[in-house]
Length: 444
Image (cartoon, rainbow, N blue to C red; front, side):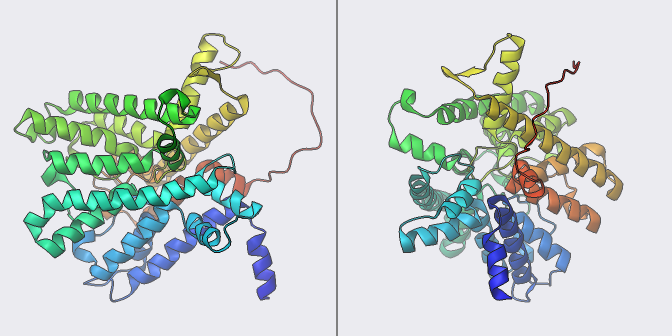
């Protein structure tokens, strides 16, 4: 019996193993959060499971207040779930094998490649070293810098703990905060805004990019993916900040409530870059204009970088779809990006990811309109936030019904493991032995 179970486990495809790992991590976290030591007033099974799934998928949506509901033990459980979920449970297991044997089997390499979304196998060791080293350095540096804000306010022990919790949550793009208002009280703080945004941007850009940047000095020597991610991240973040600033500058409930122009700029920057990856907010999301909420939904759908702690369809996928559309409009045979042609198979994969993701979001939104009694913009915002594992909400999360919580949990899991990974898990990937003649369809 045990041998048959082991045989089945080792025969799992990498996408299946990755999905089951996140489900197992969530269930283990739910058991710990349900324990009497994890909360002050007790946690229901639905609250424990929802919070565990949200932490394991580094989303940040919460049905209870993290800072007041959970004890120190419960908060540490959330920290471990965020850390394991952010870096990938399979990454931890393979890294242990790597330390013990100094080599990886082909199956372990395939599993790790799926977790990191790295197409090749030759650079996995370097990605692992860069990933763990960079994680330790960034979280430690973030803790030290944030302590300058919270130690004077809260004292040494509580201030350092606050700093460490938010540094881990930010770098892993989880968005959990020990404050009920997230970071609204620090909307105009240069220190908190710059450190937190640096942490979730660096964690969400992709570890393959980090390894490439640290190993090369000149931009022209970077890999095509690295160039696309660096330029795309810079452009999208600047555009997001300017759009949020323009739409919300006169809103008395958001940016308009801040007295100084500098504070409004910091809040616009933070709320412009956070939706693509992290669930922190420095202004009231429910008070934002519908146009701003709709724009933020687009940012959440795009997400961060491949092989990072962020989710969404990924920025690289969005870039491939853009250059493919541009090539079609220009009647070019192949899309070109930074002097390199884009593989048609990659375009097909990008279009598939976008279509599957859109289907998941639309289906989730449709189901939530049945289970929840709330404005449509709030429901759609919640669904996109869950799929992108962002964690921003317009106030709907705490009032979700049990069926609504189930829909959001499924969206969070799908968003974390990736829609294409889920499709590969459910579909038969064997190649067809029969080749059919080419047919023509009229489209457009």
